[in-house]
Image 1 (cartoon, rainbow, N blue to C red):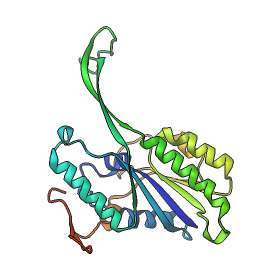
Image 2 (image 1 turned 90 degrees about the horizontal axis):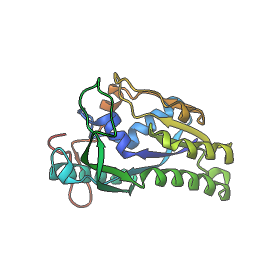
Image 3 (image 1 turned 90 degrees about the vertical axis):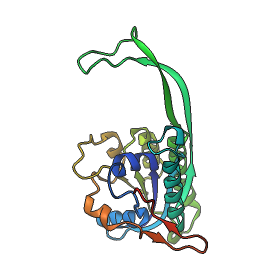
Image 4 (image 1 turned 30 degrees about the vertical axis):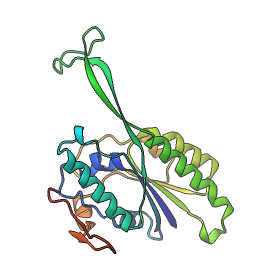
Length: 229
């Protein structure tokens, strides 16, 4: 099955890679492996990666975090990954003050905070999946994408999967949850309702076996793995 994967970069990083030695992930290699495990006749045709640029002023390592992200995205592009950018929105807000776990939140006791939100990514993924599904009808059968795989645990994607399942019932749908081995995460049942299969966990061995080499040669400047990764 010719397969197109749509990856929520934020979900992938914080659900699977943050705090691990596996950030230099060869994503197309990993995805090709997983879809073959689930369906042996699957072949990876396209990978679309949706993300938002790091804000150095709010990142743990400041400018280094931004440079590391840019380096990784450059590495993905050398492997044919299409990268799409959303944006961050930072606004002042009031939120209930945290006292302790035994004290409930109260609207009468609020403090000012900066609220950071990732904007446009979810909608962009949903529209892109649906548009791809719709375009297949105009192609000869041998050129059609036969399977769409979403890499995300975000239940905001449920309406998109449901619409694709209803409008294009012959299209195979899969979900890879970016949940690493040993992490206790709730399985988003609403996503599973509208898919043919769901991968619940990516193992540490799979992450270790699908890493980029420390240096990726290009026609211009080589791409080196960030030192602190």
